[in-house]
Image (tube, rainbow, N blue to C red; front, side, top):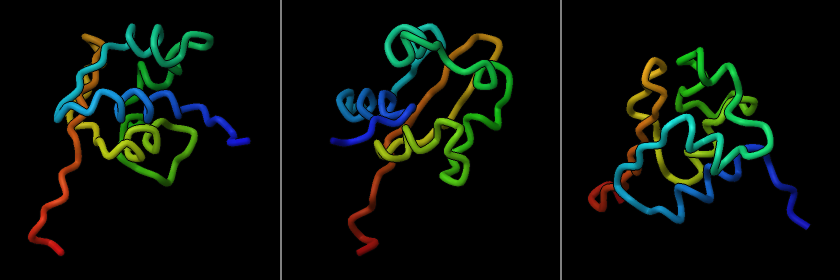
Length: 93
């Protein structure tokens, strides 16, 4: 049995969306991805939570990085996040 990690919902959502750019509001995070707990309070207040950094598993980065997305914009006041799909260039083989 595979253990479900806290941010697997982000990975699954982004992989199934498959757009080159995905914008999610904090409300969408609460309703779609964290229906029981809501988006962590630190994510609502601290830009560092949204850093594209695998080294801090308590933050959500591996959720979007595992889906091959990166955060390109965060607006804490308007409560939204923009993800861009990471593109692997074919000439870098």
